[in-house]
Image 1 (spheres, rainbow, N blue to C red):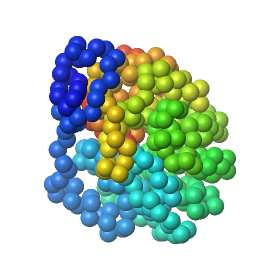
Image 2 (spheres, rainbow, N blue to C red):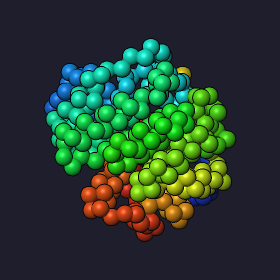
Image 3 (spheres, one colour):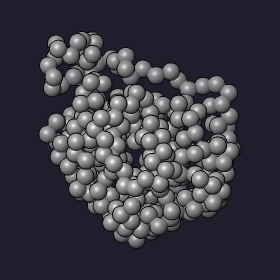
Image 4 (tube, rainbow, N blue to C red):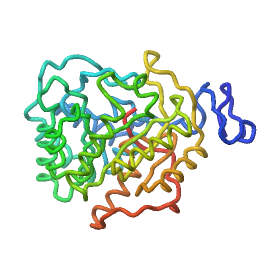
Length: 332
């Protein structure tokens, strides 16, 4: 099925590569709101420690699934970003250099109390800090791993303005996966992201992380539905592979509020699957692709958990893997 003029129609009606106009959300984007005792307990636990999750801030549609499955994405360094990307629901402002020095210990405690096996640590952009918050990020990794033996930690980082020392600080912290999102194709970057961000800058951040530690798993994400073309996506896949990226997630952009960029297209599950196969043929070790996939995607995390726990390196490319269900988690 596809969405054309607000109605679900058979793909044959539109043709294989037709652009799907946005209207009411299609059935494949409808998810049950999280709730229940477990959800409320975890939410209270986080609020007591003044911790924030990108699951909540970015209004992720898969929050309940991830929290119930031993994974979560915690947002460190506060909830106020110094940048204003036009796709993101996180609030923008000036944090005035404020940092909670106890946050690394609080994050570690939360990982233990939530019985996490895999945690994604991400943050707002903190251009107000000398190192962009890299040392604070690293402290969260170190304390969490010390408190929860066997915990796997992924860091979904800002670009640190390309600061080599800041990137090295993160890589040397002992994390298991280094992630930084490309977000969109080259031609749309200026319209979608803050003017201080950049397509080539993001690729350079990923490249530096891989060069610092060749065995490190690197990961990135792209949103679909902003007006990108097949050719532009192909080029983005090639650019990410040239930067040494191992894991890619592809998901549908969903407009957080009327103040944010409108959706140009609701991409069908069939097209997401075709793009997944195409990306795998480019050489990515793993690709999670679906309407509700987000960068902190539980299925991708489960895959990485099994690979890292098994100590298999490098990650082998697979073109014959079955498609993951259309549900999960990456910051929109």
